[in-house]
Image 1 (cartoon, rainbow over the protein chains, first blue to last red):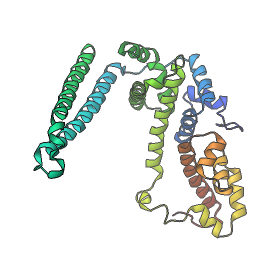
Image 2: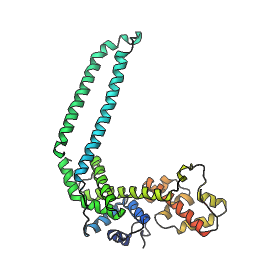
Image 3: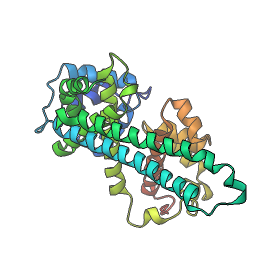
Image 4: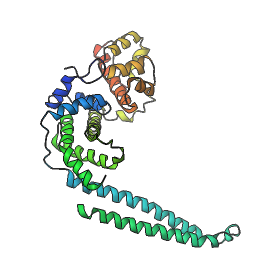
Length: 142
Length: 172
């Protein structure tokens, strides 16, 4: 079986055999998948052939478990972002209030403290709001 | 896209995506996993979904997922234990070993006989000494794809040269 035409695109024979599950060699299937992954023309020919063929049905639908994975991914991203923010706040507080006063910074920090405190408050408030919105958004899917 | 819209997309295209994955990997459980991976990627990159081309877009992601799975399986099968530990820069490439043995004409002939998709890649990178990026541009293929095709092509070339028996073992 010729998998590729002389112009580098997949042959009709290869696409038809793929649909009829008649491509046993793993390397050949890898080569076809590799080509379909970047070639819009062959992918369109393949999906057009699939339109006329009976589609397979998975034993288990992925929809429910998909939302659980999306949720887990979102929680991971959320916690990672705010863990970084919390670490930054901790370092900032350590620098602002933890160090003994130095001559060069004494004139600046007292003025900055209210602004920093305000920003930390805003960040925490935003985090709580986002967490609450985020968890609320998933209630319909849990 | 709202969650409801995305759920509708999953319901509409789940069978198509599963079929593509199954026809490429030929294993039901793996195809189910890849189907889920496809929709997870689609959800995470939904901003790049071209309106009206959902089928093509999901088909491409599914083909990519199947390709990655088959590539990993192929690497596990073909890379011998300890082979990966040899630093690439320290071991001469098989075609270099053969070239040092004065086999340039035979190498060129063997490359000329190579089938798609390896022939053009090996011709550009090994005979015309083009970089992978230049070959990718010339062939209209992604750089990563050309890289893996060149790697697989070299392996096939080495096997072909070893089979011919004229150059002894070319293994690293």
